[in-house]
Length: 325
Image (cartoon, rainbow, N blue to C red; front, side, top):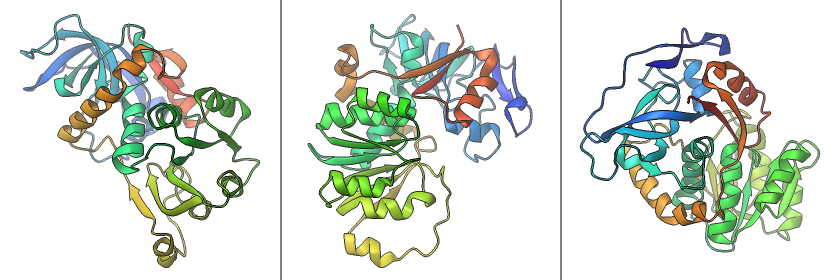
């Protein structure tokens, strides 16, 4: 089979689509004929050699395709359309997927749409509910609202919690998408001080939950934006990892719960349990269209370098997909 690897750790020019060994199925795996794989920032870090927990040389962690070998698993049959997270190897013609991490694709969705669900919706669900403990009608500040996780989080907060959603993005077109998905307050971070806008929108109380992709450069504004007893979930450091002159007493005075998390390096059991919990809450909502994946663009797998370029330049609203078949 063919798959995409990085010849050497580095830039997009290192990506090649080449012959690779067929996947080896372990106990509990099913074999998937890949039809679409989605692009994530994890893939870029993997390409650059900056991750220490990825053992599969083939890049990619989320796929949609067709079961070609159930491997003795009774839940799935040959020909079933499934989507889910894999332990690397998504940018390929075939991939092994743990069966307890697979989700059947709703009949209303095509493979590109299905590939756009697992990583971002599971991340959003984990951060909002397992970590952020978002309750009904609470307020949430979602940064990078036009990103894959951002578009998923806006929908989940609105549909599952009837939440008051405040979001930031860097262009009017991205903010318009956020508005269509149900965001209540739209903030262009390039033109507005989001902390001041949050203060106005919440009558000075701040938000109950923050989903932070940015990190260091947003530290002070996030602190000003969060409510007493607020939950601040750090899931990215696009704005840097090092914060100078942090006053721990500030966190204590507001009784802030600050949690950092990454999904990809989590255990197989954790991902399986998260997938089960997510599916039970959302299957019917994808079927009836109340939740929907947002696809920005689709590239043939041979043009993975162009897909990575779009993500690196933050040009996408929603997911970037590689079409394999």
